[in-house]
Amino acid sequence: MVEVMADLLLEPFRYGFMRNALAAGLLTVIASSLVGTWVVMRGLAFIGDALAHGVLPGIAIAYLLGGNLLLGAAFGAAVMVGGISLVTARSRIGEDTAIGLLFVGMLALGVAIISARGAYAGDLTTILFGDPLGVRTDALWTLLAATVVTVIVSVVAYRPFLALTADRAKAATLGMRPGLAHIVMLALVAVVVVTSFRSVGTLLVFAFLIAPPATAVLVARRVPVVMLAAIGFGSLAVLVGLLLSYHLATATAATIAGVSVLGFFVVLAATSLSGSSRTAR
Image 1 (cartoon, helix red, strand yellow):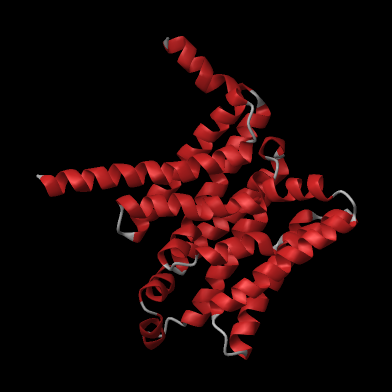
Image 2 (spheres, one colour):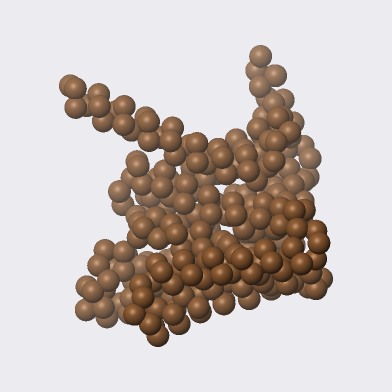
C-alpha cells in the first residue's frame, strides 16, 4: 500500500516537464500570494481579474506578429494600468468604473485581434489557459526574477501598503503617498500576470491572486502570517492539481486553479464548523 502511494505521488515527477511545471507553479504562487494578499485585503479582486484580461491585446498582437509574448503582455499591462490612472485622474467617475471600462474594452480588443486571424478558438485557448507542461528553463528564470522583485518590493513597501489598506486618508496624513503606493501595487499585480501567463494562463492567474490569500484570511489575521499561509495553500494546490491532472488526464492549469478554489471552500467549511462547535460549548 505504501509503495503504491509512493508511486502515485512520485511517478509524475520523474519527468522533467512535470518538475518544470511544479517549479513554475510554486514560483507563481509565491509572487501571486504576496501581492494577492493586498488585493484581497483591500477588496480589489476585480482589478486582479481586469489586469489578467487586460494584457490580452498585447499578447494577441505579439502572437500574430511572431514577437515576444512577454513584451506584448507587458505592453498590454502598461496600457491597462496607465489607462486606469488616467481615467480616474481626468474624470469624476470612480476607479471601479474605470477598471470596468478598460477591462471590457481590452478584452474585446484582444478577442477581436485573435479572431481576425481565423484561428480564434485554438489561439485564444492557448493564451487564456497557458501551457504548464510546456514550461521551459528560460521561463523559469523569468518567473524567478519576477518573484525576487515581488518579494523585495513587498518588503520595502510594506508600511505604505499596510497604511493604504487600513485608511487611505490616514496614509496621506502620515506621508505614505497612497497614490504612489496604489500604482506600485497595480504594477506588482501586472508583473505577476505578465510573467506567469505562460504557466497558468491570463485567465487562471486570477485564481492564484485571489484563492490562496482569501483562504489564508480565513485562518490568519496578521498580514505576514496571511502571506505565508497563502503561499502554503497555493503550493499545496499546485502539487495536488499537478498530480490529479497527471493521473486523470485533465487540463493542468484548470485543475490546479480548481483545486485552489476548492481549498477555499474546504477551509471555509472547517472554520465554520469549528466556530459553531465553540459557540455550542
